[in-house]
Image (cartoon, rainbow, N blue to C red; front, top):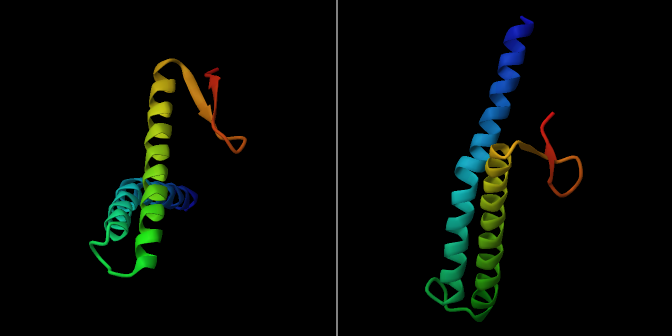
Length: 97
């Protein structure tokens, strides 16, 4: 029974990461595109929507760029024999032991 609970716990973690990274990052990108469209006045005619649309779009694109850069850093670091540690707020690179 312990093996089954460990399998479900691991599957839940994989599912959560797949939802966040697999669907979350593209959805954030789409929300950024929609924000820029609202900022240009394509979706609304209000002046307040134009002012917040570009800010929201820029924030979304920045978060997507950070996620992509972090993913590439993890892949490249593992190729050079390093691991990425998240012990602190910012990721750090350490040699694999």
